[in-house]
Image 1 (cartoon, rainbow, N blue to C red):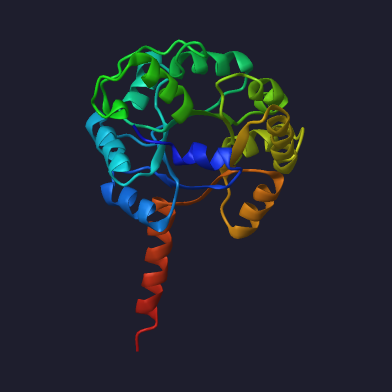
Image 2 (cartoon, rainbow, N blue to C red):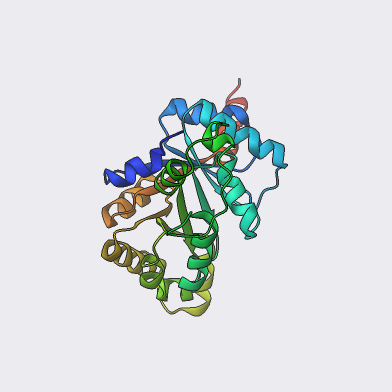
Length: 253
């Protein structure tokens, strides 16, 4: 059974080198691993894939030994832990604004005594073998993770209570949705929200992070203590490459 690279980096207090994927591109998994990334954030909140496409990408992540942090399109309990059974190293849940919702998610994706996840012990995460159930449960609670997104002012105000929930491993600041709502409310800046989350996570020994596009933003959040640092996506790579290569045509004599 795999050892999560994300959790190794958290335990060593190191940055988690993370990129984002929203389309079915098996080769991206391979190239991200070869480039030295630890984790791919697979977005199924805003992108659609079939179950078989998701399972294939997760299988490729095991082949090339890179974590996939899957953002699922559902909060249904068996749907969440089936993502882990199919091989995801972690689950990322959007719009977690209360500790009550965080505890509901822990209940779904962690085994007893932390949560109430159902036991299978024969899927890709278990290498399709029947392990000793106690050994498997201990491995799953130790080597899979739950990340919750802080995307509303309410979530920022509840950051300490959310960070205190046992079984929540990472707080993930979503600057898009959070920034939109903070601009409308005017109650704090996005930088102030990041700092509130950072303080809450330091107090409760939890990791945090989020999208940090550009080296200046990466440095700023890393200095705050952020570990899960997302700095690229296949969409950004495509669009940037196409613009750059199009300019070569403009330079032709």
